Length: 504
Ligand code: AMP
Ligand code: MG
Image (cartoon, rainbow, N blue to C red):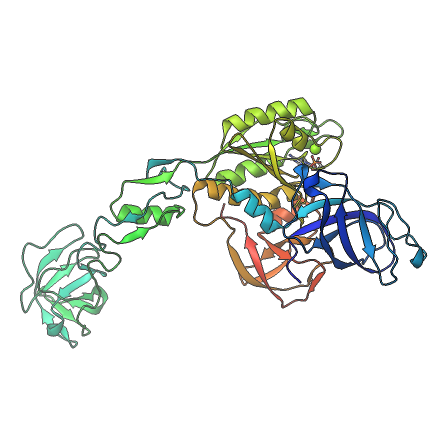
């Protein structure tokens, strides 16, 4: 069985525990999509009653998506009895009871497909020169070669005494000290035979010396001479010129994200400015008439807007310049106007809410009315199924779902990689850590569940609590996600890969 790349959703009332194989055809849509689209994998119903069943589709791969991603059509269930039925309504007489009373398909794509479609049209933003401290969080648009050796000269790694190692090979040697060397100063003469030099960490080794005896292994005699309590080997406590890197070495590469260590390295290598991709401008908009800013009184039915804070801080901490625009009301024209202006302000527009199929979800209709292309709608993941991506006049929109957990999960799974690509980053994924479950974790559903977890420092992993997409408390407790495949029960002790939040 090939890996399923698309999913169909069947909505219906299902009865009994059954295994059903599907062959799916489409009707009532354009000629490009008419005909058979493939065969659904066999799926088992584990629950009775009204539900959506997501059926993995096997061929062809991938199923072409119509605009909006929603298709209606007929389908049939092939059973062992030879009876079959087509259409939106049917009864399966052989089994003597109704199997499905309503069905439609809605094509969902896998997370990997969705991510590929998001990343494909995105190009890194223009390149500029920036000072090192300005460039924090930006990605390099050039390879960086060292302008100097580091260390620039052989140097003491300890406070102590520079000696000729051959003269201090055993304990008890006493030598006069007539030379003092501190960091930043070069000796005006060589170390002569039969003497030692006071030397501090970072000072250049005087010519003639080849080891440093640490201060703790010496004593000063009353006449000022130095007694060595221990022998020393050649080159002990000496850092060599170019030991870290040599002039001309490539120390940083195109696409690397610049954090404090990388910027410090650039400074040590002699660079004052770097060629980087400028900051990406991300425009964040929440959608929903019920939303109010925290700090203002709530009328009945209203809630505080947490997604604006979530997304603004997420993208800002990921190195973007975030522009927050007023909440989009639940109204088509106003949403169109809001999207139009958001598009003109930034490189990437991220909305939260109004993305689903409800009567008051206007994001997709508004986008399409503006002429925007919809690259996908609905991804076979939980939480965050209703997420969409579109392109219009060179601008890009990721429409995230409104539930704060869904918004966050889809933001880190899809919008953050998009930001990384625009930033010119070589790496776009989340950091991962392998841990071990300290308690069972299960996903009885038919969609992959990105479950929020707590990854302990010890590597133990457990659920962060209630997994429903509106429970923000468990989100705030978690520090990562575990991708749990459909119909999976993992026992304690199972090794798991944790997708960690980016560093904030
Ligand atoms: P929607 O996707 O617009 O249907 O919203 C789904 C759920 O998320 C609803 O309960 C909304 O009230 C809630 N929601 C939407 N946007 C936000 C937001 N910005 N902050 C907090 N909750 C939100
Ligand atoms: Mg809404």
